[in-house]
Image (tube, rainbow, N blue to C red; front, side, top):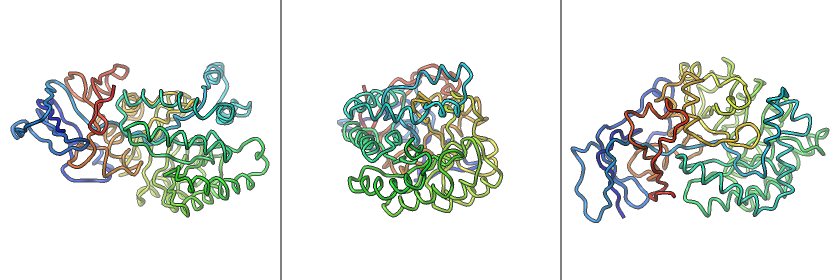
Length: 412
């Protein structure tokens, strides 16, 4: 089955050749074609270009996109959308003056979500999580990474990863699963970190690998959570089972985590609200993708990733939502792109590159997602009539999306 979009006002992120990512000054270059066509067959892009060169095809559904913009769907490389319940009380607690650390010390934060997850059935977690997945799909996300990390036990982590597997099986969106058993230390292990690390390495990882439930491994490498040495142990154990690292790091402090991640060939390092000059130099000479999560900074009022400094130094940067119940209860990537422009001094071109092609790199999906390229998945956003793609970050609370197509099918 073929679908031909014609008279597209702007076809954004058009790449004739397959590229993995864009860095530095290249991030401000966003190729586009005005008055364009886009040809799709089944679930793949098979042609695009100027309307002057639009092919005549038979047995094809033709869609007139006059005045509309088409771009690749967002690639959200960092989420925690599988969870039970919510943490709305912590939202109120922060308004009333408690810090993230104070809430955690009172039994809130990650341990609060872990308690809720243990008390909730796998099927209920699935039913709650699929609503969130459907929501982000409707908002233009066409590929998403989902982490575990609220189980904090063999049974709990397996429960979460099985829910992610079930979402994979039931929805057309590309999903990558990340094992995040090293999200926080359970109460029983607060004074015995080595025992919990042993549980992760010798029980959790083998069980997860045996069921093939995860693509990546993660840890919250941060002061008060997992140390550099503990994270190195986890990354190396994951690597033995084919799980490449994607690590939470530098959210509140910089303690040498970037160096450890680069040396252990992490695919991405995520958060980076605090970044030193040494961190930038280490990332500059690596294949590790820095990932910024501006909506987390917005929601809990912490510094934003210094995107301008990083990009001007020649780095690549991806953007992701960090959708989770405690610090970012939203997976709206349109707001992520807008936040990056408004709060992180990124241009619209840089932000869209970060949320598409660089996001795909941070998920290991460079060959299939993130750009309008022949042979890639037909996973696209069709906007309402607009004057320019600049309106996407400019009208930051408006719903400018008319339709979303994921792998050749319009979603309802």
